[in-house]
Length: 543
Ligand code: ASP
Image: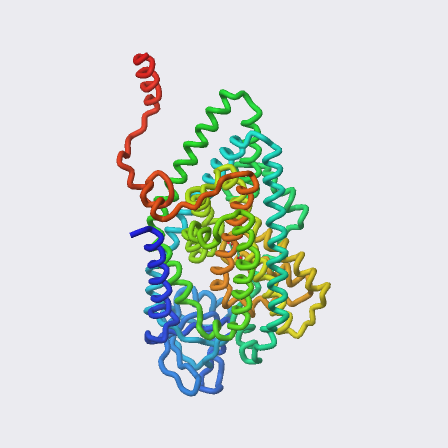
């Protein structure tokens, strides 16, 4: 069975199990209660005295439910005792308390402890898989970019490639925002939301972390200067992608300028390291079916259905916008600009898409995107190693579109009328915010605060959309990755590269290339540094 098929099965299993046996599943007994930060636990149903020992308690057991009130029980642990005593309350470890709390997303909602246990048990598989892929990202980008730049040899080519890449990214991000804003103005999802849903969403999430992150956002000038790493080893260690890209590009340029013989040695080394990293990607991908299942099980299992329903109109607009962007922007560029059939193109990068969807991280997907465009579309390493890492860091059309929709949606709910000038401000600030967002889960939501602040919409409003963020993140990350791959094939075509789609049958038939069969090497062998000398001696003797 092909790897893609196994990964797809993994996705399906994760999603289905998430619905069936996740913490929010209605099929499992919902004996657990999650208490919101503002939950009020009282001594009698419908009122009574507040129970002070409930302060700060997050999870409790459900004893019974009457008229929308939950009778809950919880046992104090050491850290609860410390917290309560700090507030001057009497508390002892192991003591059990009981009280009533109203069932509502703000106050208390039930969950299945069994489903939660299943998530806790399987979650590490997803994290392990992600860590295996992430382990490769920095060294892969570093070595393959040095290799790519060194083999370009011509700075004018580099300048042209850089110009095209940045031009494409800016143009498509602006288009994505225009599509998102037009659709949100047309559908007005904010106006469709009822008062109860609004109160429920505003109260059920804590947006304070997001708000403070926005306050720390650096200015544009700082961001540009920050691309040059004062300490390149720190940049590598901290996976500061733009800094790594800059450093690798400069080393590649230096190799083309220095003594040829010495440079060839170093470039050969980078080539070998690059090949080794590629193999590590393949090894990590062996874990993908299980990893993807575990990641999706957690996301689907813990996303509440009530939140999904309340935000259906907003989520629908984001998804429709992403679909429009893919159909009206990427499709013509791939079909007519790069002259590759669009569906063949999507098929060629499908491993990357599946991964983007399940990890919600374009950075973690980067190694697989690089493999997909090089092996399945015959894009050269020079182009792929330059365009894709920049794309994974700065090009986020899906994120920009989502930020545009979210900003307008939140403004609609607060009844704030945004003028055309305000909406133009959203385009500019969301372009910056999407560039500034890292390719990791939820990054777009953090930088959304910058967009809201730019047009004077309360940043607290992010609480309204946090509930579906993880689910929408899957779709916008997949869009971001399609955008990166689109730019890559376009730049490759404009550089005069002959693109060619490798079919799954060709891939399966050639173990040296593509995704299939690379690891079934007939002859894993120990490597000795002297091998080369021996070969040289053999060659001399033969002469
Ligand atoms: N998760 C997205 C990405 O990695 C960024 C975001 O929109 O949050 O591309």
